[in-house]
Length: 156
Image (cartoon, helix red, strand yellow):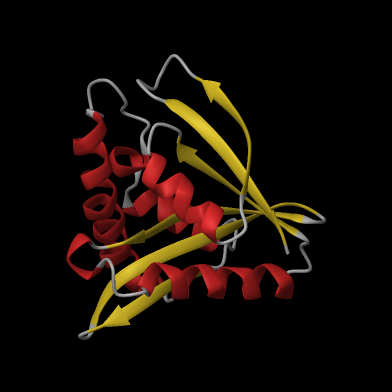
C-alpha cells in the first residue's frame, strides 16, 4: 500500500471494527483505546513511516475493502494487527486471502511465529483463527477495556 491510501485504510478499520464494537457494547466512552476508536491517520502514518510496518490492502471494485499490518516483535515473532474486511464484503474469502498473505509475509520477514490479540468474548473470531492453525495462549483483563483481551499464536 502507499501513504496516499492511509485515509481509506483508516475508514476500513473503523467501519470493520464498528460491527464488533456494536455487538459487544464497546463504545468510545468505555474503551477509547479500542482499535475502532483509536485508529487515525496520524497513527497509521507513524506505523508506515517510522516503524515501516508492512501494511497490506485488499482491493475490490476499485476500493480498499480489507487491510492488515504486521509488527516485528523480535527476531522470530511478528504481531498481526487490524486484520479486517468491510462488513459488506465479508464471507467472500477475503479475510482468508489476507491471512494467507500474512503467513507469506511473516516467512519473508524471517519470523517463525505470528501472534494476535482478539476480543476474547468474540467466540466466532476465535474459532475462525483456530481454523487456520492459531492456538489460544492466554487472556488478560485491562481496566481500560470492558472486555477481556485474548491472545493467540501460530507457528509458521
